[in-house]
Length: 216
Ligand SMILES: [Zn+2]
Image (cartoon, rainbow, N blue to C red; front, side, top):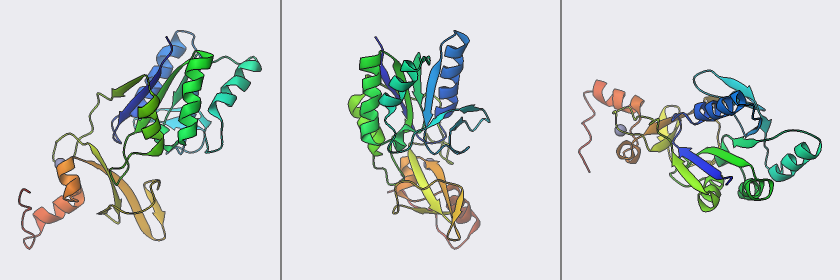
């Protein structure tokens, strides 16, 4: 039975690397996939992993009907044995419904990879819809670690090195906007709640004026 599978995790947990691995394994068996992505760090129409691997992909902006795209491909003699979607948290909920239709009406496996929650710990709309519709949800095995060594479960956004909990849901990281440097860091829940990033933890140990945070 074809399936819609949601591979979920935090940032830095190896989602894109696993997506590339799945594509590679199927290609090696003569299967051909369609890869969708959205706002990949390597640019439009690319699926890249932090380990440096990159492959061509189809950029999936808000208005793109993913089901219609597949039907077009197949009716023009194109081949598609499976579908991979990276950065699936950025898709609109209606596009997740289109993925379910690809599984049910076209009989293809769809593997969607995404971050579950944003920097405010709220579900991304795309990820919420995947949780609602997926046949199977896989928590990724490669665990991202907080600076303290604990399992990182939260995606923190930093502006000029300070953790923030307000702002637009989607801001691409490592970018200078309006003279602010926006970045992301994965943290355990304890340090997310204390807003303690690796930089602020370092500053706290170096500064004699700052007392250690007492356990809540
Ligand atoms: Zn921690």
